[in-house]
Amino acid sequence: MDLALLCMVLPLLTVAWGQYMDYYDPYSDYRGSDEWVNVYRQGFNFQCPHGQVIVAVRSTFSKKEGSDRLWNYACMPTPHTLGEPSECWWEEINRAGLEWYQTCSNNGLVAGFQSQYFPSVLDREWQFYCCRYSRRCPYSCWLTTEHPEHYGEDMDMMMYTYDHYIRGAATTFSGVERDRQWKFIICRMTDFDCQFDNFKKK
Image 1 (tube, rainbow, N blue to C red):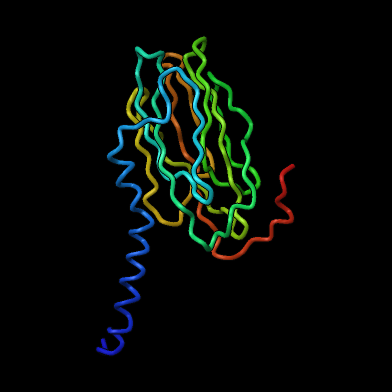
Image 2: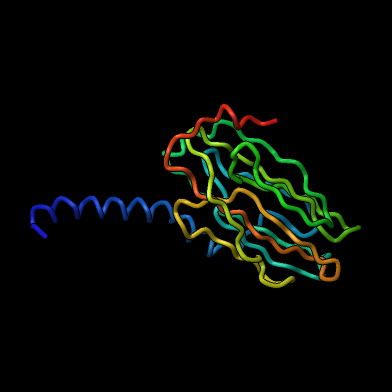
């Protein structure tokens, strides 16, 4: 490679790599944190700061604590190409003791969770906090494998890819284990600006 060209390209690569590492730096706090957003058998409400979305979910299970889980989440700022959050809302409640599948409506991305524990079912109901961004929209979505892999195990789900986002989840509930497995709905975001006139909430 021509030396002059190399001198031009190298600073650009350095800046790009630095931006990439800055974007993922908060994971270091998440991995080392023993903090939880809830206590056993209590409700909680977790929302990412404005302009951020959920990128990691961590949980541990306790049979003796009412077959309940402690939860922890990590958030990341979205890139400026997505635009600003144009609206945020709470989705409908997913009832305890049931299997369910839910995506954020209106092209939203998951930016928080709300949950209440029900001792009569030994399970939780769940709501997603969703935000829609003003420029880009999700596409090419798929389900992850089960988290945790087996009922009663710890969960540690992280988004390692820069341009992939959580849009919802499908869950199954075991009446024997009194625990829930999650498959997260992961989507890419378009590389072009979307026309949102046909995607208004009903």
